[in-house]
Length: 556
Image (tube, rainbow, N blue to C red; front, side, top):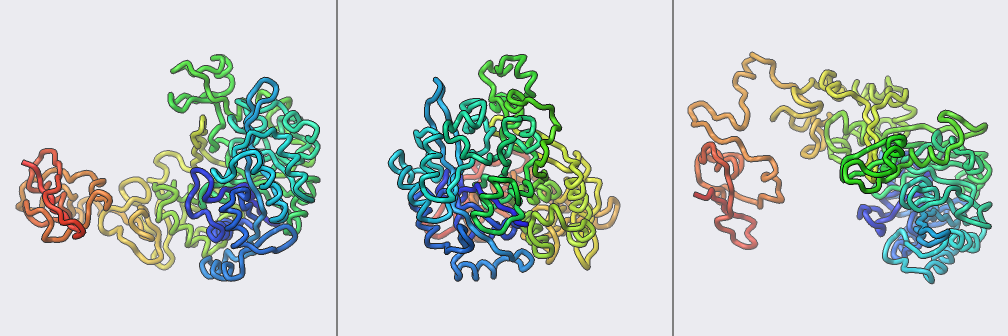
């Protein structure tokens, strides 16, 4: 069995991370458990050069890292994640054209088994528009003609309509799409054998439309940054080569199913208007004639509404022989919820590092690793979260009008009542803090080797520690930063945390610190202690260029 994520973007696409190069993609695939990754953007000249420099032929129609790059990669990833990683040449093309008195905007995924075939596609498309401006080329080309160019590039090349329900840029989109996939590709419609469901729909929703019965349903991440790789994927039981995968998509044999977002987490699930904060189900939208009740401008009709318009079956219908699917929440989002920090924070990455080193790729942790094993390193909250995820017990806050939704596994306040955030082997469970789950309570929350942080932006790994029991000697001597020491005059509340950020505080030394009172841990606190209970505004008093120091003073 292999997982494939065949729709991603390179660093040459808009709104993409700068580390979207081949080594980073391969490392991300290993951590996620993805065996075959789309290269994305092969029509972009600079990216095509990088692909040819970094990849070499592997199994039929697939590519692998150059041997030296592969050796370096295997030194950097946990042994538990080692597996073959292959690349398939792929690109997303956006076509904008007029047909049937309407402007059509449709995105397509194109796959090629060789660089020679990819170059022929690139050469044909270069005659239509500028391919160097964006990894996802935007061309004034009819979808039918794009399919023809793809088929003429060589044996094995094929096209899959991308995220078919997305409101703005999809073959069935409410804004600029068609009412049937076949209408888009005209006399070549029979050459389309698979469609990508997109983040805002899952197979269950697509099964409501009998017009889609003739297509295999696939899912991909459409990732623009490394952490997003594998958030959706397609599972195959075929041999690992281009032509076996293509045949599984064509006939269905060997297509085991898909790994899905919860569709509510996608950006266009219900209807709505983001600027006004309006989110509606299909029926209220129809009652308002598709107009925002706040500003009276048109609502963005979501995937749920569009599926309901084209559906001719009830929700819950399943066609015979339909492949299975599994809704998941990315591991980073689960740990983020437990720790009450962002999913890209250092503390979340530190926890994932420990988990994948112990149990292997993230998809295996979410789906296969026994919860009893997870409890050994992950602790009870993570174990409970994974258990709920596998049972489908999630809390959904749907995304709309371009805004991602959120899927939670714990009710509000539930984490505050739990015990340790994560159990640390050999140290027992970390106690609960008095604030939101995972927050440190003062200096005792400093980094501890092999443990997990409650606030990870400052520490790669740390342990959540409880506040001293009320009435204890330690609690009696403990004071907040704003509380004056014994015998000291009351001082102002410390300034907000933001001014302490290095972006706002140049390097300073004891000699360059303001001399307005007892030396404190920072210039801001020193000034605050002497200034009394009034607002503080710091201004630069002196600065020597190149010295890295600056004097600060409190204006009188």
